[in-house]
Each structure stands twice: as C-alpha cells, then as structure tokens.
Length: 152
View 1 (cartoon, helix red, strand yellow):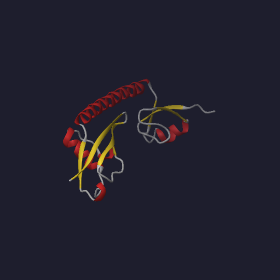
View 2 (tube, rainbow, N blue to C red):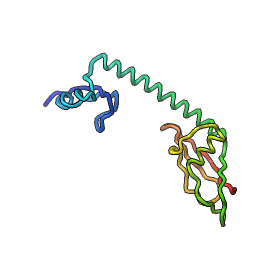
View 3 (spheres, helix red, strand yellow):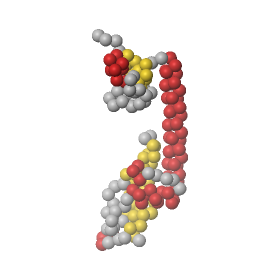
View 4 (tube, one colour):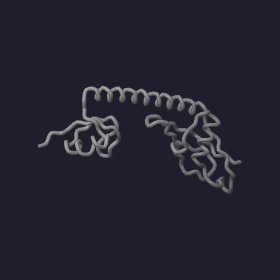
C-alpha cells in the first residue's frame, strides 16, 4: 500500500473537498496533477496556520451575514401583512398571478429591506385572499410573510 499524501486545497475540487480543506490523496495524484496545477499545496505548519486563519475569518464573515439576516427578519416581521393589488374577475379570481418580484417590491416599500426575488417561495395564487410567502434570508434564517391579494 502506498502512503497517502496530505494537501491543502487552493480551490474547490468536485468529490474531493472545498477551498482550504486538508485532504489525503494518492501521492501520484498529488505529484502529477494537484500540485503542478496549483490546486493543492503540501501540508506544512505554516500552511496549516494560514488555513486556520482563513477559516476564522470566514466564520466571522458568516456570523456577520447571519446577524444581518436576523435584523432583516425582525424588520420584515415588524412591517406586518403586505398588500398586492390585482385586477379581479368573476368569483374573486384574479387576472395574472402574484410574482415573487411583486412580493420583493412590496417588502422593499413597506419594510425598507431588499430581498432577492429568487429567495421567495409563494403558493399558487388564483383568487383574492390572504396567503403566506416564505423568504430565505440566510440558510439558517427563514421568515414567513402574509400577503393580502386585493382588488384594484
């Protein structure tokens, strides 16, 4: 059995690891591909200190992003229910549909919080009434927002 070689990855490698991970690979894979391509560096005490420092900085950045998401969640919850106006047809049916962009615009005008429309999940809206949208502000922070679809 050949001895495994430890490397620190300089970039994400599919099925191997992410940037900054310490991985064990076959010596030939390290010597012939990862090191010459600049994808990995041999593990040394200095490199391990750099990796630890990078991870510490990344954890601080992620904590800051979560704090901002919590503040946005509080602002959105404080704003209350949103109003979306749509043209009404028969039996309280609406023309068109309620889009995530309309929800994002309503949140911006009511709570002064910018939300990416791709992070909003809404149910199928076909009639006037009250519905609930789910907004993922951060992988660990999700907020439920009620919105009323009213006639124009």
